[in-house]
Length: 316
Image 1 (cartoon, rainbow, N blue to C red):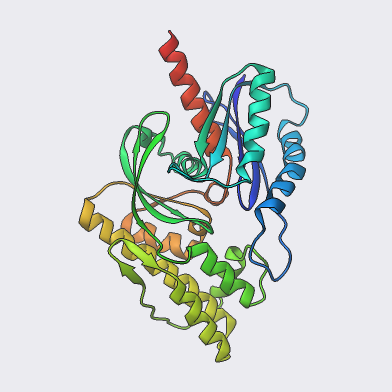
Image 2 (image 1 turned 90 degrees about the horizontal axis):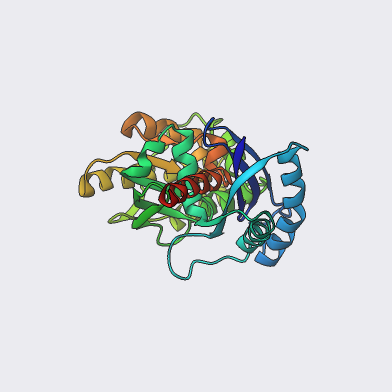
């Protein structure tokens, strides 16, 4: 069988995946980068070192001694498809993919980390037909909070930025509040579990400027609540509910201003069950499954398969 190999070395996950374009099977191994307690991230130099340590082991676990025939390799080489988008951590995956491509004499295709997120979301929601259509995509994580108009071109995406955060990313706000409450970074899952313990009704007021949002206020308000001795479960719910209502309001506005299109939600923050349930019910949004919401290499492997098959068609 022929497989397509994908690498993603982002902050804060090392990930490698295989995708078979006939059976649509995905095999994936990924591992978070270790972060010291009471901190909210890593220096890029540390992230690069940790990716180097983890990538070989994860690849061995993925292959498990099988004889895998790889047809092409995909890699996330930069964060987004905009000029100047760069992070050193992506060089690890890019280097490994480049070496393997040369040694194995197979094509290598480079994509953005964001494109990988979108492709993984399409795959996990059975929406790969959107590779030839236009849709809206929310990419919401620790490093990105963006509302995008995406047009699929069979093998890649044309991405237009419609809205973004003007200060903190949603994942940053969640992690900062979580660390303040004594949770371990990254804090999303733990903060959600804590929030679900709060049965109080909470009213929040998201801050939007057009299709852009502001999220620094939620961190400041949570600090105030913490200083007042408010229950941690209440603070957790306040934080996540503010993020939820912000995404809801952005969704409502983009549909009003730009017309109805399918809605795709990707990125680690979008694995939150509170946010997912609310938007699925109200707007029929399509959410990537949790393992495909967080950083992953599956979307990169899928995009590599589409690019290779399209190139083969052109050669015949």
